[in-house]
Structures are given as structure tokens and as C-alpha cells.
Image 1 (cartoon, rainbow, N blue to C red):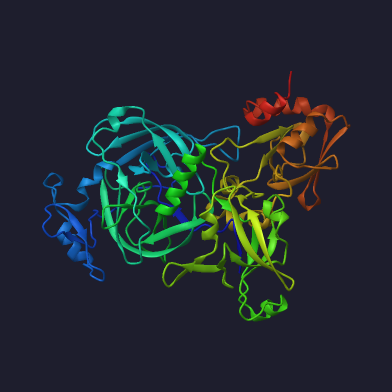
Image 2: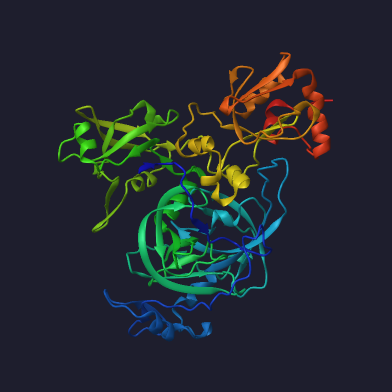
Length: 560
């Protein structure tokens, strides 16, 4: 019933990700895939040979008729509408080596994947784009053009995990020769015909599937755990389609294929990153040389559809808005907004009681769409009802700060080992590693509460958990304690993992006392901690007692 900008939600979306060259954790297996055919509302333009123009408004071909018209055509004949654009689509080969979040001093087995990408032009500059999840934790990336037998080494220039977009670059100029970059088109309308191009499972060559735009709304981006504008289509999006372009009837790229909804009760539900989100990513790169992310208002809010609720906050019949339930203390919004404020307008656009705003003709969309159009550091004007007073406020938008991070930006996870106690920072990838894809319901209740509703109280606050206890003499009797939040060390509240390591290294007390959630306590003999840590490292094959980021800040520990 309550919406949260920047909050996590249960994930039913499956990333239409890379086609795995080798199965990993049983997530990808052999499946029968029907041959891809192009169906859509295109026909030859009058007087133009070999090109197709959009059909008149309201005119539609049936899928069978469109398939019969366009299914078989030799690329060299020039009769196929999309043939001229296919050379801009590439196949992406990536080698990944992800960290083991449950054993953070290790990495998982190296794996290979294939996905799709394309070359496009934006504001006079060419870019090679694919999905962020296609190159996550990459050790090597290669790309191959259609009809070419040579794979070119590529580097990742910028990666936006929140919007699931990555920018690649190829230094070999031969790769760019003879390729006409795609142009971006406008946001499509409902029932507009689209074609998805890529290299999905079921074959090695390029594939084209077609469908129509089913829905346009703020969508849950599974990879980055963010809510941004998305397009739902009924064209097939399978593993390997990720990063491929989606075309409209004019041959313009209107988005990037990136995920699909799976389940027993769904069929042909695919999602596309629309051009406004892609252009936001590219503009961010042009302005900053990297990716700063999408801003957030920094509040949890509630719909005000109940008349009794509105009357209790002294709202008149013509006033609408959403109720502020909680403000992120680390956000600039904390200096402006208060709990129980009613946000009625955003940049002079009226917010309805259900949290939506007008969107194009006859449509409505979540007002977080307006926020996502901004950039980190931009300001917005809010009209707020506080008590019985209407206020006009200006807020600076910042990147969302969450207590349980949805991702760690392709960095190695932090950890700290004391005797046999393994401490790490709680994040969504960690919970998924521990509890599987159903971590949103299977994780401990206290951790889920922080995942969905927790805000950091300071900018450097982290949720530190005791992940597990590695057996040794010093930790005898504590082996059954795992995945519980650490609250304090020797009576001092723990701000983050680095703060814990600093206190342990500087400890001069006789005992090391760790206060955990649920009033559990672990006490170690300080004089035995150093030797016990070295024994655990030797017996469990742990190269370092601290992660690399802590060693850089504090130096190696324990020392001989």
C-alpha cells in the first residue's frame, strides 16, 4: 500500500540476459526456441524500391500477414526493411568472474556469456551500447559484427547499473568501418509495431522478432533494483537478446531489450529501456565523463486515496497529493521536507492522490518519472501542505542512499575476519547469495525490514552482519550464529565495517564483546584473537583477514 522511491521490492523480473556459453547454477539450459520471423506494420513506400514506410494511422497488418510478406528475403536484394540497419547490431562475448558474496575472499568459477549490442549516434557522437548485466564483473569483452569472422577486443567505458546500460569502446578502427550508426527515435505509442534484433539462444546468427507496444509505465529494473520508465512489448525477448536494439516502423532505435517477465501465468511479456532513459545515460556521460546515476527525492510516501485520511490532514476537496511518511536523514530533502508533509505539486505539475501525474494524452504515470528525468544535483520546486499552510519549497535532488545497497557497483565485497567471526556489509547481492532468488521473503525478518524501509542515519553508515562463524578453538560454542546484525563492539555502536576493524585493531580490553541483534552476545579473549585469526586463515584457505579496501585504509592484519 505504500510506495517508496529508492526502496527495494520483490523481484519477479528475469533479466533477459546473456546467453550462457556454459550453464551456471542451472540458471540456463537447453530449450527449444521457435525460428524468429519479422512481423509488423510495414509496407513498401510508393515509388521507393527496397524501403518500407510506416502504415497510415489505424492501419494494421495481422501478424500472419506481416510474416508472410516479410519472412523470406535475401539481405542482398534490399527488399527487407531492416536489412540496412542490421550491420549496426553486434554480438557481445563476455567473460565474467563474479565474487562469492558468502565467502567474500573468493571468486566464483569463470563463466562466459553472449549478448547483443549496437552502434548508435547521439548528438553527433557514436556509441557502442549494451546492457550493464551483460558485462558485469567482466574480465574480457569482445564484439563481432554481423557477417564478420573476427572478434574485436572491447573495453567498458561507462556502466550504469541502475538503468542497466553499459557503454563499450573498440580501439581497432577497422571495427567502425562500413557501419552506419543507428539513430534514436521518439518514445513509441501503445500498439505501435516494434522489432527486436539481437543474438538470442537457439542459434548463432542474428534474430529478429516482432510485436507491439503493450504498456508504457514506470517499471522495476531488475538488475539495478530501480524504478524507471520502461516499455512492455509482446515480442519474444530471450536470453542473449539483452542489449539489442528495438526498432520502430521508421527504422529508428526506440530502446534496448533488457528483461522479461516469467511465470506460469505470463506469456510474451518483454521489457525495453526507452530512449529517454538511454539519452539520460548518454547525457550524464557527456557531462561528467561517467555515470552519476538517477536522483531520488529521498522520502517514503503514502497514497492519499482515503477521504478520511485527507480530511485528517485538513485537505480541501480540490487539493491532492501524497503523504510523506519518512525522510532520508542523509538526503538534502531532510533540510526541507518533514514527516506528515503532503506533496501536492512537483515542478508545478499536480500529483494525484494515487501518486500519479499526467503523461501524454489520456495517460497517467507514477510521479517518480518526473524525478528520474532530472540529474543528480538538479533542483525541483515542490508545493507542500504543512498543517493548514501551503508552502512553495525548492529541493536539491541527490542520489538515493539506502541502508541495504541494491548493488555494489561491480566492486569486490568488503569483509573482516576476527578469530572465526566473519563480518561483512549486507547488500541485496549478499542476501541473494545466502537465500537464493526468494531472498525477499526468506531472509531474516530484521534484515528484510532494513532492506525495505531502512535509511542510513549518516552518510557512512553500513549494515554490518556477522555472516558466519568459522570453526576454531576461540569461537567454540558460537558456531550456530549466522546472518545477524552487529550493533556494537565493547559498548560502542558500529557505524560501518571499517569502524569495526579500527576498534578491533585498537582494542586494549581483556575481552572483545560483540553485541548482536536479538540481544545475542559474543565474547572473545582479546589475547587469543590474533593467533586464532591466523589459525583460521591457514585452516580455511583465507589469504587475508580483511578485504582489499580495508587493507588499503588500515594496513594488513594480523601481522606476524
